Amino acid sequence: MVKSNSIQNTEEYIPPPKRHTEPKIAGLRRWLRPKLLATPSEFDLATTADLEHRKTIIFRLQTLLQHNNIQLTQAEQQEIEEGLINDLLGFGAIQSLVDDRSYSEIMVNGPEVIFAECKGKMDETEFVFDDEEHVQWTAQRIVRPLQREFNRCNPMVDARLPDGSRVHLIMPPAALQGTTITIRKFPEKALTWEDLVKFGSLTEDVAQFLRACVIARLNIVVAGGTGSGKTTLLNVISSFIPEDERTLTIEDSAELQLSQRHVVRLETAPPIPGSDEGQLRIRDLVKGSLRMRPDRIVVGEIRDGAALDMLQAMNTGHDGSLTTVHANSPRDAVSRLETLSLMAGMDLPVLVVRSQIASAVHLIVQQARLKDGTRKITQITEVQGMEGENVILQNIFTYTTTGKPGYQPSHEGGGQLMANGLRPKFTERFSEYGIELPPRLFVS
Image 1: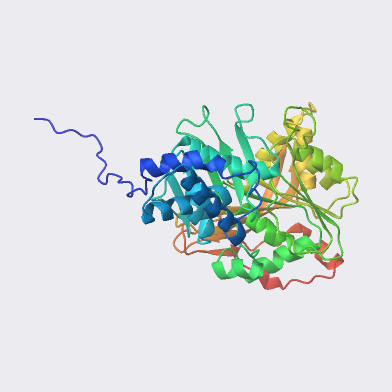
Image 2: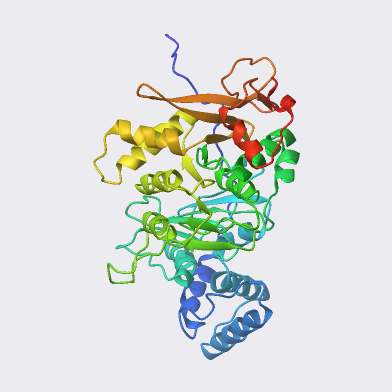
């Protein structure tokens, strides 16, 4: 007999045991959920920690059970009370994951499959929703306080939880396994540059360098893949903005936590339900911000034609602006900005857009999630201008690990962000702002 050369999976994945609700309790809870509310939005702004609201729900529950002569054991009574409190005041089956600050991301892939990330490691959890209607109930509770609609006409929505966590929702038929909820949680206390140094995301020298770049009003783009920590890093870099400057933040879902006093926070707005009016996109807010006398413009993420408006703002007196973009390297970030700018519909030649990028952006900070799950700065790259038709980039710092020399960043853990031995051309701007960096900062 000829042996097969096909590759066999040596370890078959076994999902963890699931905490399914008994059909009797699940059905009863489904029936009771809307009946315990005076109006659909009664408890939209409440949380599971609100004792008065908890008492109200339990009282109404007991009244309904007695009125309908429904007999429950003590264990069933406790289970249905806890479940309804989570459904009406919290986020259903994932409430304990939302409460646990050690989880940084929660991914609901339909009713039966819920993953969560803790310390860079992603695992499937034991939690499940009762059914698709249960997931939808939770999704509606998330979007309703934000005056956003999540339905067949609006099947994909960006939102946020009261604690600032970012939420993305997609419903069937686009989501084949059932309604999908992805929650990106953020620390209760905004991280500082000292925290990032402690975590090994950057060094004190690099933090000192980035602070100098912000004070000297360099335009900075933070690039990285999904979940690499771009927003966290942008938040830290924004903390270097001087207190006496007027800063405008523009985001799809408000996440930035600037501590300065003179900050105006702007967030995109969906159309008025049942109308095409009232919508404000990132691009609209960037244009409007220019009339608000900003010293700095901080855009949470550029993902469309707003890139061109942002570049024009950077090129017309709004130095010191900051933004993020999805890209896997500084070179990719330039290409991404180029592509997004062309989406503005201005029919500009590619070379014109490229020269706009070269003159507007001074620094690209590349953030990455490494193989060991840690998030670190892997490159800090200067945009030096144009040479012919190409944007010239020069690495200033590169993340390297032992045994992997060279100027390309490593994606292994246990490395360090090291200087490349080249002093950036813009350092002369530092002296204009009274900043003197030690020469050793750029010595490799």
